[in-house]
Length: 164
Image (cartoon, rainbow, N blue to C red):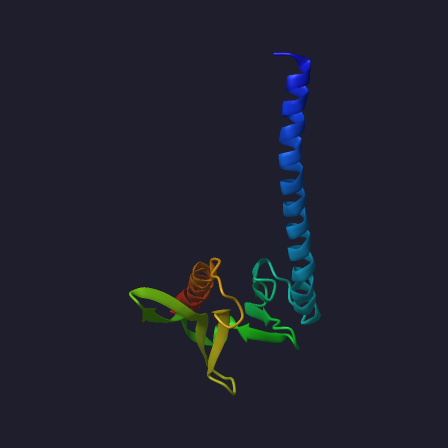
């Protein structure tokens, strides 16, 4: 093999890899910029989110371990919805997956968490994770809702264990 063939091969690989790297870097930067208002809103509420998730550039959920509070954030283009939930008041947590069957295919319409909370003006809270009107494609929202449901239920179980 001569040197010109090796150089042409290296250039061809570089022309393929550099655009992919640039696109991935740009996407990570955009997600980071979109995530910042979520983190700022939590800080303004005096929360220290240790564990948190952010998805679809408009949803965020996090846990303030020290205050045993859950912070939910949703920005749909207008004013962001911010909800702080005292996990000590949560009586029940359920993942809601609203779907329909069309030609033997399951079409998911909404995914969210339904929380029963004592001591609040609205005893049932719904925290949406996915709505077909806002996003046409699912990208792990069901697994994310199940993850946070498990976190909430583990907090409820540890609270009940302390009370016994």
